[in-house]
Length: 199
Image (tube, rainbow, N blue to C red; front, top):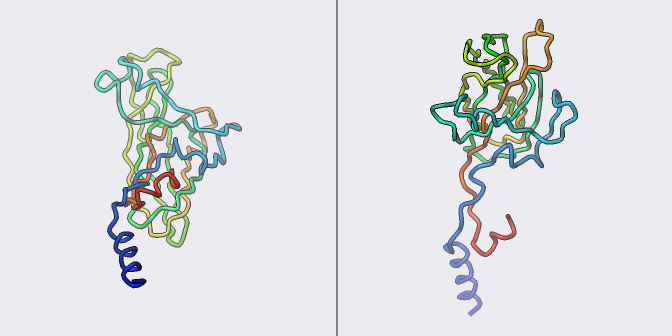
């Protein structure tokens, strides 16, 4: 009887419906695990840049784009405790905010440093913002974005994202944006009855 009961419990646990959870983590909504380390002027939360997504003038093709643009200076650093599972991938875009109609091609780069059992760092240039004569003086505008994809090594614990600018550029007020930084990973199966405990 005991064997049959144990077998039934095992089979129920093994084959009961499980719900896929934790497939995607977004930097914006995961801010309890984010530390703003440098270049945020004492801010405790990331700020959102909304000009492009709300303005038909700035983005006549797709004014209702899906990306969320997070503001940071061109010399800034943050860390994100992701504790990613095997097979995880970081995806985001990076762009600069230019001011007025003039071209903005000052050197700027984004580095992603992954720490954990497997170390990895990836550095990409932030694309220049070409001249745009339709933009009034003093108005911020978003330049072209570069998509960034980083396959995270197994055991990745922390992502450090930091921007660097030309050492000869003394203007620390210049800004860049991170577009919808997110970690996509294989789902974690949770029994239906345990779903409330992980929400």
